[in-house]
Length: 206
Image (tube, rainbow, N blue to C red; front, side, top):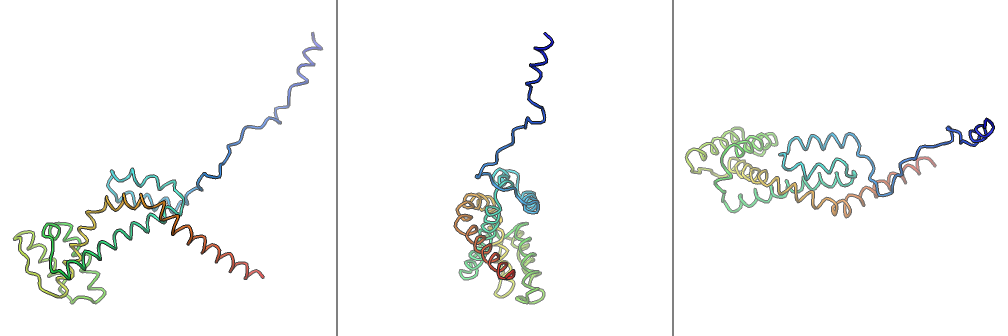
């Protein structure tokens, strides 16, 4: 009996030779997002209404190419309507009344008034005149805008208001177009820059 127990114990495999199963990493698993990119997405989400987070939260685990594509599209969907609407208002001499009044219009007047004055595109005092015109529009429902810098500031402020109201549609459109834009534009550009950097590095070592 003692010999049989000893024989069974002798055939037990050493514990040190038993390895825990390792987690297999598949080729389709996206690389981890850099911390600075994650913090940028978090800051971006804090500025958005909560109902838009369901569209942008997935960017936290997306590849860097998709995140870059989204931010490029987000800027495009802001700049194109802003410039297009401002040009339409300027050349048609028409302003939509509801969008050209209220708090958002005043915010746009202050923003573009300071920017245009810093660039030297309007005279000193025209930004304050534009702000006064928007305030009078809010109270009296009547425009008295002439030509020049005052009208330009109000036109851009109105275009800014409409572009800001379109933010939910812009976010949804940007998220929807992100995979296609990343595949067609961002990924080829990143590959091109990587190839150029690799060639220049190789020449430097020779």
